[in-house]
Image (cartoon, rainbow, N blue to C red; front, side, top):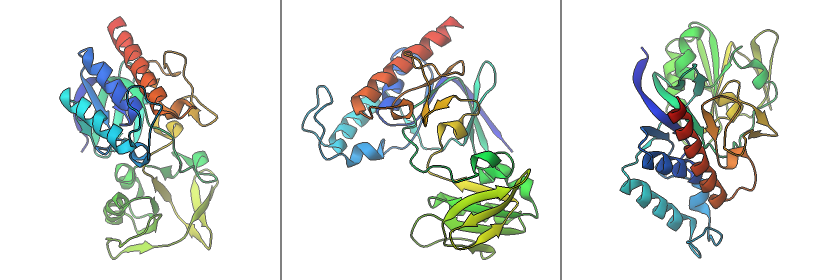
Length: 288
């Protein structure tokens, strides 16, 4: 059963410099916000050994800068919701953000997802909605008594595989990470590398480096999705979300900021764009 949530003014997807800047500036303007991400904030930021080009903070490590960011949002009462958004749908006067068995609603959205490093494999995008999906628990009932293959990029994929195994006739699990697995006995583990998706009107096979699998459904459970997969209809050019100078995307009420809209991939640039996106979202809401 899908659980309905309250409708927010602004939903922000991403907790790097762009997303945090957007959250701060939205909160200053008294908007009801929710920000999705990780309480570790930005993985790339934490790994930076020294930062000298962020105005006001020099000779600091990425971890030090992250701590300053955390202090700032904590002081404003901004908390990060650690849930993975699977899809975002424009519903007219609001957006529906899908998280497994829950739906979050927001009047506007700011995408600050960073760069997607795990690219789709050959044929993947061609079969989206035709057997390829990104939320196994959402679509599992469609594959009752059928064969499902799950490509998991982190431990969370194991939970999805176990859930699907209760409905499907057969579940293959392909872990793209190392470590011990906690899977039901009826889940078959395949340690190989996905190469290509094949089929006619729908998915029929997954071609791996060393073998091939016949399957009815195929789920890629990555750490993050590319923008085009996340938001149907979003205009993406050369791997980046297309925006104007006010961070408007081609979808009314949807804005984007940070690395996901293009180079240079710099923290201070991302923070500035996050501010612009927030101001644009506020203007959009006020105009309504």
